[in-house]
Length: 315
Image: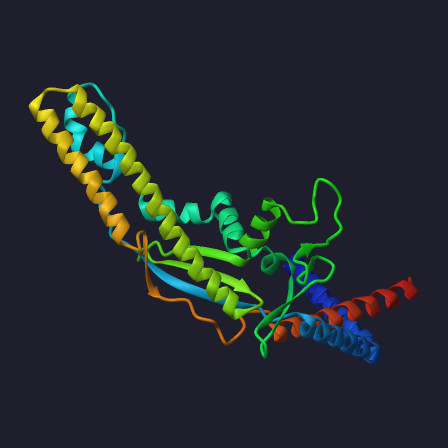
């Protein structure tokens, strides 16, 4: 019983010490409230200034649905329709490839596709050297230390192996910071977005990206169908078996159908459900959050310095 009382007494003393410590801490901060307030205000003003200096960033996005596509295209069609006969002949044509939607998503994020996109539409200055955007004139201003829009030359000073004109690797890295593509696992819908200083440029780039990925996937399938047709034609010339020739003729027709559909369908792999627009409201920065962080940071740092100096003098 005495041991229990001793334990309770020890706990009460610890609580009392904690209460005194918190009280002392509060008194130390309260005595230096003027210093803490001034420091906090300075941090807040710095955060406000920093937030106001940051340019608005606008995000334009498009919602896409995968286009229905015949799975029997190219060599995938060869696998599906000749699978049984190929097995009898001891030939393995492989399994169906990744879905066209998944492939298109990976292609649109690839270095080669992005590099070709930047080069085709000449967007490198807008991507790397843009400094601000004027709403009144709808024009971009460029960083004079990086790019001269008058002569259209790069003037940045860099050390080897870098060159005044940004490399493909540099451009890809910057572009991927502005670009995002997401697929909803439940609905299969795909969302593509671009962030930029200009809402109109963001919208334009999104539209160009969808145009180019549909074109790229179309050209890939047409090339594959032509290659398959060439292979099938060679097999037709080499075989005299009627049943095999009939199937080969059917596959040749399938490749011709693939080519024909590709040539008449613009939205080859993605159909636009909700088109991209030039947003009126910025997506970032969140200036209120920046100011709040500056306020809290100023208060916490100044309080820590005051407490540290107090105990340092006593020690």
